[in-house]
Image (cartoon, rainbow, N blue to C red; front, side):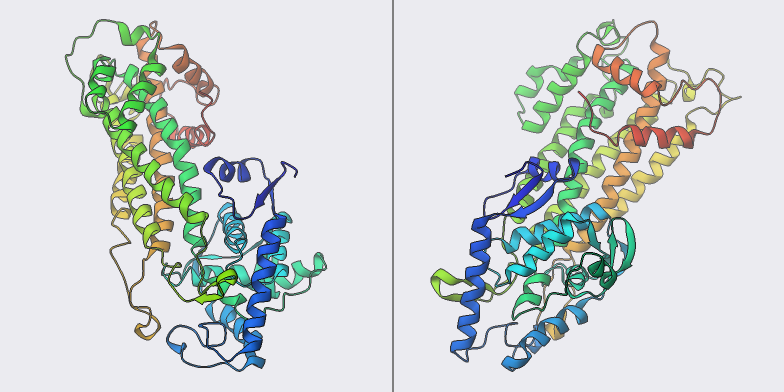
Length: 498
């Protein structure tokens, strides 16, 4: 199979595959095995419904509190269409295109196991939508993260019916117009299909994977930027000594200390005689703080990799065992808790970063006040720290856990919900804020490092500084720093080359 396609079936996806999907603009496909499983499950369900009068939730009954209402066999298709139309109740901002892509891919992945009872044509259309850049308009608000991400996934599914809106190659239009462009017919949903499409955790999972990809990049940048600040503040190397970390061997702490030692190898600044015995915690405890966040990242990543390789709709169909079982795999509790944890951990990266920025402009360790040659006449880097402080404070507010809340719905049938969707969207806001705060530290640290000349930092750090200086020049006198801040954000929006 071509490497331009990501094959989806029962074989588990790993983090690198998910990262590559967007980074290399891969398309998606299902394997022959997945095709067989989907087809076999659908045939089993059709036979089961034709042979008896047994009630199966959401297949020949109403939904939620209406579970006891039997639906006539002739109305089963109408039931599924009504489900999608009635549940498409999203509000708020539109979900970003990369996350919509993840939602479609993850829905295909979940359906590929052959436990959901959908038609093969439905799965094929989802792959066609993904591969032809037809992305449904989905909204951030509406999911309680428990009966699956009902509202967001309903908006995703509307496009299959030729309803709602989509972005077709970046242009917003009615889904019906997009279908006409590709000569696609609306999918006539069969029994169970609407429920299979909108039950599931793909909204939370897509946000989570997108957040984790950004966090992976930002954690690398956090160590690089911290190393620049470390030398700019003329810190002592002693707290990075491997002996210290060997006797408190949290893996994130150990790896962070090792990363900083590598980044600082050969630095003239780091090896010169120091006047101070100890440095502030924001420098001295970088391995402990950054490392704890890295350990949290690894933990959360494990949960999400498990989730994206799972079947999360309801009911679940097991053709080989002649079973149709109603359960609760759509409940987002594992994701809600993990997303709250990730938001808290990433906010600490911004928290300690802002403190280093503050120390760098405070006139200590032979640095000029606010890192400008004529403080007083010029305010220098006074106000970027204000901005960082305001963002850090916003993050603290956003880190109030969503997962501790629950509001009963569906006439108390769905009496405990995860609020994982809220955890997902606010976690993304935290991650975006972390990027801004790290960019401000980078801008500040590179300015401060210039005052250590003629001494040089390590080759690794000097290479980063040289690349950054192509975008942002040394600040000789007051200028509009918002422009520099935006350039710094753009600079770290790419993966570090180290």
